[in-house]
Length: 83
Image (tube, rainbow, N blue to C red; front, side):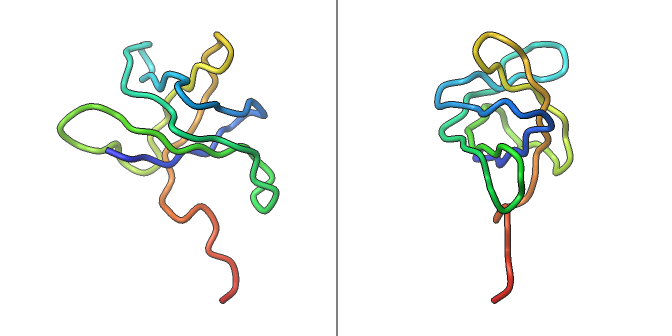
């Protein structure tokens, strides 16, 4: 399942960074990540394993450079902006 993440710290996720639950169990991995100037925070997309997607607002950890960093599952698109 494809998920979108907003980081709650300044760490920027990179491809293949692990996505874990609160207990440290592997859920999947990041496919892309960057800093979003319009949101003023790092964002990422990734794939998780399992029969069902994670609910919006679920807290997960992204292992950035060896350290688990908190992130929140959010809805796509990250930014709708004025049309």
